[in-house]
Image (cartoon, rainbow, N blue to C red; front, side, top):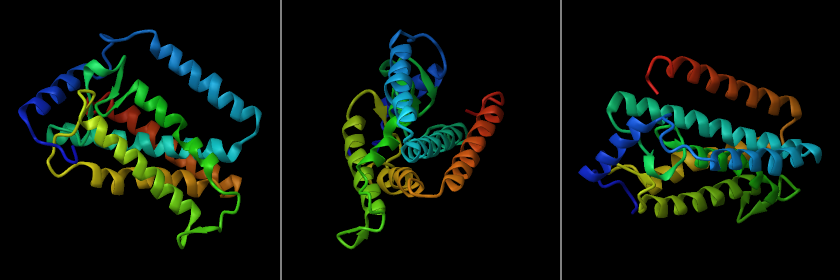
Length: 214
């Protein structure tokens, strides 16, 4: 599936997901296990290794991810349907209409793909700066996998104009550009970028959730 089909079945699945946002009906212990693996298996070892560039790259991607998920939920509130939806049956907990706990934890570590970047930040691949090349390549890989997800009951595209190509250009490329371009920046720039980004996310969540918008 390259684009949403606008079908009644897809809309019904989205309506069911909207009713399940932040309910605990499907909650199970995998929630805790995944959190422990992310914290103890990924972030703590990276902190001990003082891989600050990788950590800021991960936090940058995760922060952009959260901003997009908030905007997707806002779109859902005002238009009736989001650009993307996770189904209620596919997760232990829906955080926002487009992101489950499991998916969010995946994005929390996706920025560590920055470990694949060449040491030479100025090296070019096919005439493109390697940071931009790897951002595009990773965005393409994630977009292709999302095509598969959209064929499953777990992930839903409703709008017929939204699908693999818009996801690739408007979503995944910005995710990985933020991550891979911040990777080499001076520490104060990394701190400022992630600080502003995460402050914005927290403020939006703190305001929009109580208002019932997301």
